Length: 149
Image (tube, rainbow, N blue to C red; front, side):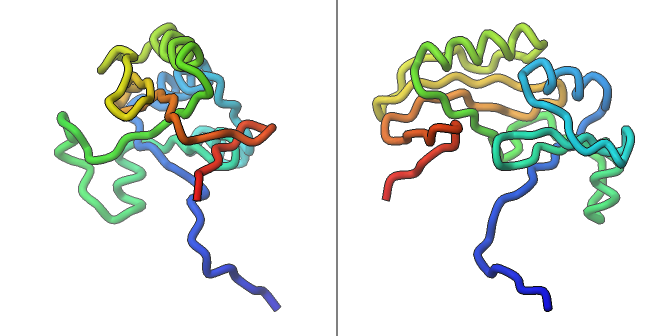
């Protein structure tokens, strides 16, 4: 008998991408490692430290979700992805790594009004990423984010 856990869990974030190979190269250059290749180049599954980052062609993802693929957004999409870091120096290094991989800078790293430090970049398909050091977050020994109570 199969049991299910009713606690919601974010397990996969799937990004619609226009050029599969360009996007795959970008995310691998950021340091994400591709795993599980049973789908060939239909979908790329990347290890994102406890969550899977999946890349799926834009039109195919829209069709899979029964949504129109056009018009593609040119403005803020109401979502950002976050890469939390332990120190401001780590934020700077991650931001530089993203730019070296081909990211478009959106906001250079700087201090926040809440005592943190953050910058923003966009991947090849305009997905916004925040690289951040938040003052109240800590990490487990294997790098997982710990939220305070």
